Amino acid sequence: MSGSNTDFILAVEGLTVSFDGFKAVNDLSFYVDQNEIRVIIGPNGAGKTTVLDLICGRTRATDGSIRFRNRELTRLKEHQIVKAGVGRKFQNPSIYTDLTVFENLEISYPSGRGVFGSLAFKRDAEVIARIEEVAGRIFLSEHLNTQADLLSHGQKQWLEIGMLLIQKPELLMLDEPVAGMSVTERQQTALLLREIAKEHTMIVIEHDMQFVAEIADKVTVLHQGKILAEGSPEKVKADPKVIEVYLGH
Amino acid sequence: MPFSSFKDYMPRQDLLAFVVLALLLVVILPLTLDVMRLNQTGKFLSFAFVAVGLVLCWGYGGILSLGQGVFYGLGGYALAMYLKLEASTPENTRIQTTPGIPDFMDWNRITELPWFWEPFYSLTFSILAVVVVPMIVAYLIGLAMFKRRVGGVYFAIITQSIAAILTILIIGQQGLTGGVNGITDLRTLKGWNIHTDSASYALYFVCVALLFACLLIAQYIRRSKTGRILVAMRGQEDRVRFSGYDIANFKIFVFCIGAAFAGIGGAMFTLQEGFMSPSFVGVVPSIEMVIFCAVGGRLSLIGAVYGVLLVSVAKTVFGENFPELWLFAMGLIFIGVVLGLPNGIAGLYATYVGPHVDRLLDRIFGKQTPSEQTQPHLESNSQGATP
Image (cartoon, rainbow over all chains, first blue to last red; front, side):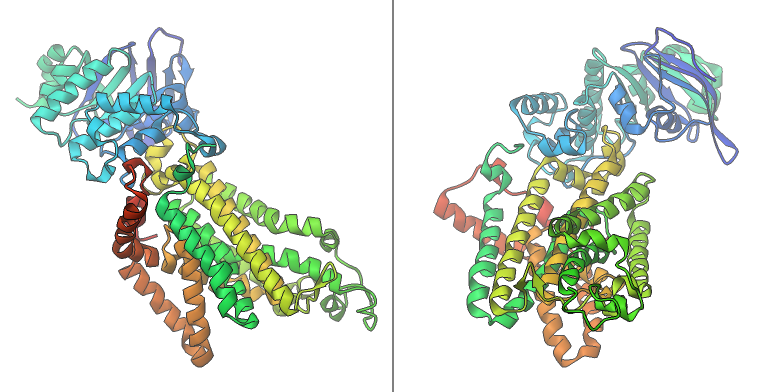
């Protein structure tokens, strides 16, 4: 099945993946607008993380199409999808614990990505300025020379968000960005995401309904690999089916 | 150049380590050892090439190869073939049924030089082959493995099998390779007798010079962005992949560099020993090379050289007195290092001696800014100690 051209930044149509006959994602279609924050919620095992894995190429789709700016992603390799403009943050903060915050951001800087490019890569003023700018946005200006392993859990989450920002992707996908954060850190993160959304489109997986209401433009509720409901946070919250399978009475 | 200053390429502590090693190898050892012991040290140092390559592959990139003997052997054999052809002139071999071919071929009733021996009449070709053949083999192995995302233990086992296969091949094809005896009785290089004392001295210094060339190349890789990507890859392969890198290319690159270094080491061994045999290719020597690297410290280029020297000296002393116990002793050393000193001798140095040296340097040259400091976390972090 091949998708049709649309004005959406991301158009997912008929997406299906089956693991040994089990359909983790089943004939899923959804569309994301430019500069939208889309939040995906749903009970455990609904297929939320799998959807992100499919978009970024970590898992291969069995059927269906994923079109990013009308470019088919399902056949591209992971690093090609990144270069097309899709960034992904993982559920557990995955940062380079042996390197400093500066070096973490530097590796994500979108230049010198080939072997010989990386051998010749120079830390020039432009790179340093960009790293400092991003570090400021993710509240880590003071920690540029700190080994990443020594950061707090919340700071690690921010660092990974920063590593995405420095790539300048058009679409950011964040898997539970506020998991394990304190209340203040959550508020700071909500502001940060709102700020980021001015220039980027975002897909966020989140459980915390209060946080979802704070950031989401539109919410997609997944259940057993299918869409259960979709719409504004208020509308979804009031949906009896969503209350039944996910939110509880 | 990717470095803004010399200090960026070679921080103070690294420079000190390079200088101390250079003093030891260029001045102290040649002045204190007799020519036979110096020649032996030169042969030990030929393994340091492999260990330095392993620091990049294993310590930095997390790629544990148990088959570095393959590349050491390929480099060693490439040069041995040249030297053998030079030694097998028709005059020297006139008592053979077919004069002018290597003696072992004649013993195996081969009457014509095999086609793949022909290019080794050229010294230029042979020297190129020392570096290029191991790189091509490493490239093909890397392409087959890393593009399919074979890694970790599987990669280690496959490289070990390749070492075993190559040994069997060399031993089995006696007429083409010299079999289990190897290629022996090598005498001259372009007419220059390699067995004289002066030749031993000269070859020792060539070996040290080439080792430093490899160390400086490795230092470049380590200090460039490539080095940091390797470290990042070792811990979080997916994160690097989803930051837009084709991981396999980086692994292939560093594996090829390790192979090229090993090939040069093998060639230096051939020159200094006067023969090459399958006993330097197989499983046991390949594992020995990993132990050299582990003892020295798998994150330290200079440490790896000391690791080679210490273990080799221990092997010689121990082996001369209790030959049958050496393998057990080596196993114990390896277990001890893995359990007790995950970063080897270099790790001990970084923890207990390094800070004092740093303070001393501070007093002599003044304080350095934080950006000039070495990366202590790379040297002293005990994370990821298991392969």
